[in-house]
Image 1 (tube, helix red, strand yellow):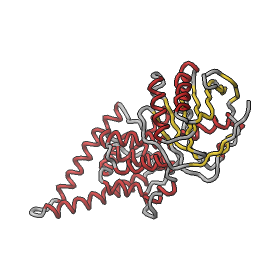
Image 2 (cartoon, rainbow, N blue to C red):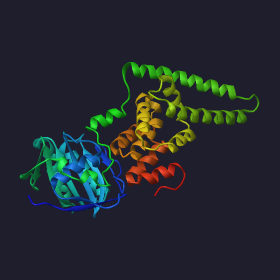
Image 3 (tube, helix red, strand yellow):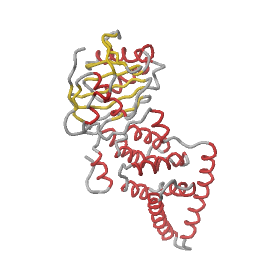
Image 4 (tube, rainbow, N blue to C red):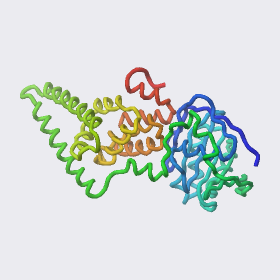
Length: 358
C-alpha cells in the first residue's frame, strides 16, 4: 500500500453544535503531526475524539494544513441519509478543505454513511484524503465507490503519534458510553436521597434570608443576605475541595444550591485546574445534583475536563449544563472556548484574571 504523508497544525476555528454529532476541536499545539501511514491515522483517532470509537463514523477535518473539528457520528447511523446530511452540514459550517473518514464496525452499517458522505463532500469540493473502515483489529482501505482496495493491521504500538505534543496527555476513555456515564444523573435511592437533601438545603437558605432581614430596611437586608450567601458559597466550595473522599449528600445539595449564585460559580471556576481530583469532584457533584440545578456543577466539570485534555467529557458535561440552563454564563464561555479551540493555558488564565481569552 502506498503511504501518504500529511502534517497538521492545531487550529482555533470550530463549528457550531450539530444534533447527532459530537464535535471536538483540539486546541492548537506546537509543531506538526506527521501521519506516515493508515495505522498512524487510526492510532491518532482515539486521542482526537477522547475515546475508542465503535459502530460509528469519525470525520477528521482539516482547513489547509490545520487540524479542524473532529466529528463523531453515531446516533444517526440507523438513518444514513440524515447522517450524511448532518455530516456535510457540519463540514460546510467549519469551512473545511479536506477530510479523513474512518468508520468503525460492520461494512453494511458504517459504509452506508461513509461512502455517500465522501461523495457529497467531493461534490462540494472537499478533498477526501482517505476513507477507511476498522473492524476486528484490521483496517480496510476503501475507494470512492466503497469497494475495498487495501488491508492493513491496526497496531497502535507500532505508531509514535501518541507522543506528539498535539496528542500527548490527552485522556482516552474505553468508549463513548464510559464518557457519558461519568456525567450521568444518579437514579433510584441515590436520586431520592438527593431530592430530600435539596429540599433541606432550600429550607436552610430561606432561614439565612430571614435571619438577615431588617425591619423597615429591606434593601439593607437584601445586601446582608447577598454578602452572607456569597461567603457561604465560597466556604462550601472550599470545603468540597478540601474533603478527602466523597462528599455527603447534604454537602452536595448545599453546594449545588450555592452554585446558582453567579459570583460563587465564577469564584469556583477560578480554582479549576483540570487535575484528576477536580474532575472527580465535579463529576460526582454533577451526577448527584438535582437535574434542574445541574448546570452549575456540570459547567465546572466541563471547564476542568477541557483544561485536563478530556475534550469528550467536556462536550458531554456541557450538554448537561446547557440542557438544564441554556443561558448559564460559565457553560456558554466554556462552550465557546471549546468551539474556538482556545488553548488551555489561556482559558485557565482568563478565569484567574491574569489575561483575556485568546
